[in-house]
Image 1: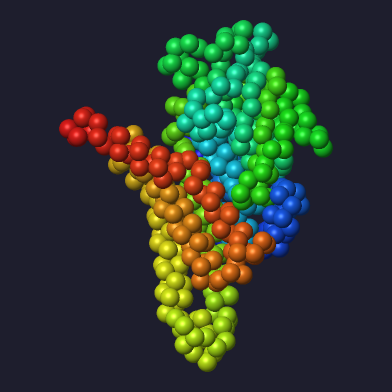
Image 2: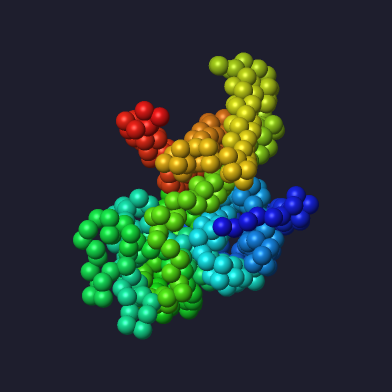
Amino acid sequence: MLVPDMTDEEFRPYFEKAQQVSEFFREIGPKYDRENTFATPTIKVFKESGLGALPVPKAFGGPGGNLLQASKVISELSRGDSAISLAYNMHYIMVGIAGNLMSEEQNKYWLGRVTEGELMFGPFSEQRAGFSGLADMKAIPQPEGGWRLYGKKVWGTLCEAADIVTTNATITDADGNLPEDFQERVNAESFFIGEFKLDENGQGDGVRIEKTWDALGMHATGTQTVHFEGYYVPADGFICEWRTGAFGVLEWASLMFASIYLGMQYRVLEESRAVLSKKTLGATFGAIVAADTKVSGVGHIIDGIGDMASRVELSRRVLYQTCQELIDGKDDDWPIELRFPYIGLAKTFIADNVMHMTRHAMSMVGGGSFKKGAIFERLYRDSAASMFQPLNGDQSRTYIGEQLLQPEQLND
């Protein structure tokens, strides 16, 4: 397991660097949102910032940032541009997940490369079932050892910038047949890591990118489809069984996604205050009667900004406290079956808040916020992505309810 050991004093310059990078994201973000393309100029800036190494322990050459420190950096980046930050968020997620599951030898090698500036990503979802479905992608054993991977992943966030790939595939027999027994298939689903080298056309050795990203929002993430067509993974690229390993460290996914949307909440509040503190309607007659109406004095605007600020502060407290409880090991007191969905409540709570805030902001600002290219229009679109990263609200409630209604749980 990764052992974080960064002091608050050591963290300060990393947060200051995140503030600088966030401003760069903010500056170029609108262009890549309009073009619906990955923000390629950010690759050099992010790599040279050293922020990608933040969660790597000092034992492996990194600064040793913990979950809460990573969360603060991600939220600050997202305050600048949520879509660009969502791409680099994949790197933090996979460093956290893989780093906590790899052997010491693997960590020395792969996390050593991360400390040198390399980026890691992890495509896992497949078209038919997303996060919860067992992998149809095959890992076929090779006579010389290792495996060749065949299949495709549909959410390859950061694939256009990454140097290292992590993914899951189901180990087959030598002829490529998946296990017929269900439990054998679960056990055969495995977690792999390897090189990710592509040419300027997105082609690599046994792997390629197909540019399929065309979504409502989060345009600049460049989340493409990744095809594995005989991609070779040597024996030392096997990390662990996927289901038994990953579910113990998925807080690195859930809480990092939560951090993105907390940063977006910061931005929604900031932009709303900037507009509404200055906006004047002139003479009005109807629901409001005044010779010169400043919206900052209108009751529902005052209440709306107060509501936004309250939601931001509550979201911050929920996320920070969840991170701190994990750091302190308090999750050991939770039912093991409910650990992941309970951790995920921070993300679902923040997701509900950011979607409410972006809709409310547009209502308060007025029709100008509905125009293409307006910051509120973009935040509204980008916030919709918060519904989908696992576990979403519906999945969490169902998972928790099913567990609590089992007879053995009631007996406890």
